[in-house]
Image 1 (spheres, rainbow, N blue to C red):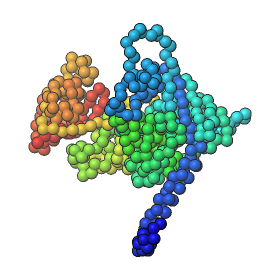
Image 2: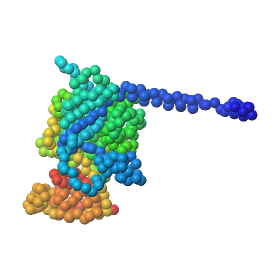
Image 3: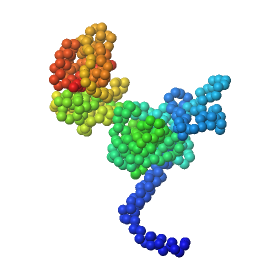
Image 4: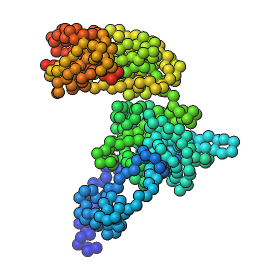
Length: 493
């Protein structure tokens, strides 16, 4: 070094302030966090498997080919043909003779899973792998690959499409089972790690936090109670574990919200407590038994709460009780508001439906309701869910500026036409487009059974009841559409 630069550089180094404790401490915290993620990867990856599925039947999803460069790729299809020929995926064929029809090759699907239990028999040991139903549905052949390269043929132990859970099994022992955590103790903001095989890239680890809990009514499966996370989840991650920093599985990665088909920061995982209860039943019996209550319920919106003269909208509203169901036998009625189930508050229809479903048939459940402003607790003997109607159906309510509907008394002809009962309610024969009734989901053929909690059995009764509500500029209707009842509030200015 030139001597003329040495002294100034030395003075500069001497005068630089030392790193503060906060700076050095922050770097050390980052190192420790990094080590924690690495530790989780070492603990959990040996239990995670890559699942490849072959099927000759319809229903196995295959992702279409897309280039990584998007629509702006400048060279066009001829560029790929030059290197790969006309058989390159996604390129249209050149004009020419039509090839002879060939036998349809088996569809190939892929996903993830993890070992969570094992059972030793007289001659061999069986290891059970939990995954998503949509990963192995319609499978003719299933093959799983572990991180160390070992491969096994697997068969389906049992599937549950309603929760999107499946269990497959392999004849092998000494396989590392992933410890299961307690998803009820999970908190929003906790670090979580997703492990799987996105796009076939084996044993990929991504990191994020718990964004939300108890996500329901997403339309992904019949029984929903999802953990939302921003840990990157992509096609191929389905069925893989979502784990905490203790290396315990607290969820099963299942779905993403995406406009592009890839990760957008919103992923969903099935809580491990729910998944394990279903998986245990699949191993023991090969099927899932759910509890049945026999009610149709809807959210208790602020408008509905005000119409029922409530000061809070905690709870859910019973819109219909199925004849000869456990709810009917116990005396539940349309208009009852469920506030607690088995001593725990009820605020969400998805959570309530899951809790009823997980109640063992034959067991008594305590249901607390509000009726006419008074609270009461009723013991209901839960029965087995078969082909009965779903225990809960969400019913949206909206409001605009005018009522906009015409009704008629139910005649024998109208009853035959709309599958209604003469003398019970009135038939909606016309709905003005854009009116409040249309926005609330009322349509021609809808039966209006009550107005402001009072039965109406003729067009005149309906008109008189609505006129009595004009001062409040709000009317509460109990309607029936295709055999399903719900309450709606029509409000105008």
